Length: 88
Image (cartoon, rainbow, N blue to C red; front, side):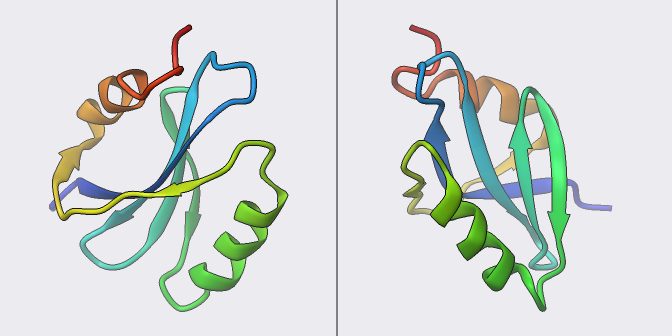
């Protein structure tokens, strides 16, 4: 089973202490990744409606991420920690 993800959106928390990611698996399902783990899964058929709601309610602006780089689940925490202001 392929457990790699493409980062679609990223946001740092308002206080700059962490980051959240919206990542997509190869089947098209979207996941919210924060606090070092996958938090929510959105089925590919309904994710656009649910994600639009999450993005609209967010305290920090979500930024789209360009590119098709695939990251393993183990690599996501390091990626989130590398975002600007994610640990200052």
